[in-house]
Image 1 (tube, rainbow, N blue to C red):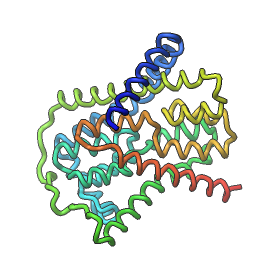
Image 2 (cartoon, rainbow, N blue to C red):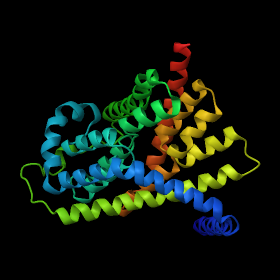
Image 3 (tube, rainbow, N blue to C red):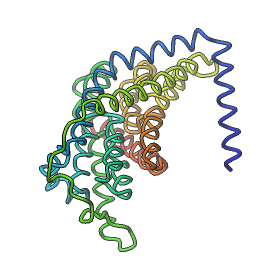
Length: 314
């Protein structure tokens, strides 16, 4: 199985090389689009949060801040105080900030492996700014759809996690999160290491940019395939990278269908987001398999909820 996987990887790399060699113009335009997306949208949106999140964890402010959230989020999702901080970051700061925060806290021994996996299953989501400004305003062009988008894209992961927590507590065969045994690192503050925080944040944003550019190039090549219709190309591009694919979905489908598809692909995050999450998880020794499974289930649930919302509205 491992040998087959290596052969497939080698074949894909060779195919990518041939595409770059035979059509450098498409590769260049895709890279330019990805670079502009990273520099004009993702860098200013994510870098401040990467930096402040790193400082929060570095100085133990994350632990102190989490004490405020824990009484509300802890009982509902079975998290420790540090886990509650991950939930906040994961829902407010956008892909892949939730995953990076979880991995950082796991590396600093403020989360155990079991809880890191549990949090990864639902704490990595699109940011409110992305949903409000990009999906709702720029793509759909219908601000009235914002409440439904927010309710679906945030309500489904929270509901999913709450149900999983309830099932885990009721089932004696399922492991429970060992919140009581987690070290309490929130009792004292540590000093700031600004050089480490800036270096770590720049490395993370560069890593994210590399994946965005790569998947933008792949999306550009997809759009040049003559065998693909515009709707099929829009769906495949959205599967690769939601920011590149979302405008194509809205141009290729009616508003109702585009609304449902945007909910599905935004909930999943695209393969680019999966690759970014895997980069942080792998660095921390965590597997990405359960993350992909749970995000896939949540994407299907978001699609079903979007269909229900469309049915009730019309």
